[in-house]
Image (cartoon, rainbow, N blue to C red; front, side, top):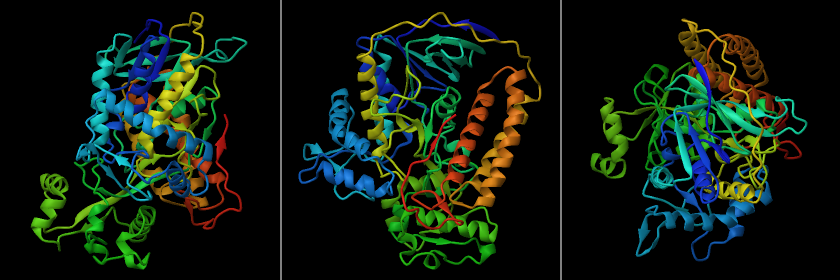
Length: 528
């Protein structure tokens, strides 16, 4: 592997989701922008968002109502100032997307607004049931034809370069190292401003709705560079993800339960319905309660999944209401009109992240964090539906405005990547096995329901993995798989440490050892 130096830029943006691309477009009129993404442009989580974007646009709806709904969902940990900031800037973001040509669904010449769980009014702007994909497609088209934006696909973040590590008296972010996977080279990127928009860390768990790119790269890199992280224990789980070896990350919408779907144990465990034993609302209980119930039954009976049965409904009804689910399941040999659907809960959204202010600034000068990789205070202990995409938009603009208001001072010359490692023939298979081990014990010990003993076991295994990965990283040349594993193990440690420090059950963090609420609601803040 060789090491070379890439051209200098004014701003480096890591991540090609809604947050990163929005920031790039805001900055491009005056700044030279590089967008780095470790796979293809559209391979991140943003394009997978089915729901929509929350904004107060309907007559009779108010900013106060949207703020209140968010604070309630956040279980006492959403920051009021950050929440109001996002809510009040959301309509501006929708207007900007419409100007770019995003084809939002309309009715009688007006935006069609839907309502989702936790919202007190219709305020969800959408593009049928594929909002993220439509917005992503539009932004990519604009980015590709914007002269001041240079795209670097298949470039994986290795580490941030900081002044402290270069012996400078003032510590700041000077740029980054990135692996060009196609050329097998580590490049040195230099810029006075860097924005991390790398998404969440769902791949730290065995089951997740996230794409393969969600490996916590930005969170881990910022932590290594000296930034604080907050609320990493709060991971949102979706209760019903299709369980099948050839159906990675396929959601079974909650509407199936809304239309009479019943959750059953596998035949080997009795095949009986179990939700009425957990909540009077049975299958119609909130998603966190349903997810905990499924987790409890799977652990109690030692089974790999449970079943969601909607086959008692007429075939015509199912084909009309759930055509995509029917088609996908049928491809896998499951006829939902006659058979129950195997499902498991799955990690869905990372509510914590890199500590950032209302301009997206982190603890490290020159470094901003936006989108799911950042902790802004909006989500608190639980995320309100459709608040995630609007957070990306609002903080992308805020970070861009902050950078635009700052004079450009090019960093000093940076050293090329020190490439003195050798190739190890067994590296790939060992990394794969380590990743499998990490995802399974994180699922077993740091999943939906936690205990002190489970967290201790996870912490012990993480320490062992970190020692092994440190040896790999110190002696062998870097690959994307090694970098992702390194980042996931770091994020796993942060999740466990945060969970161990929260002696209560709040929002998405549920502990059998601390089932009640603490007297005071405080965010979890970890510092390197």
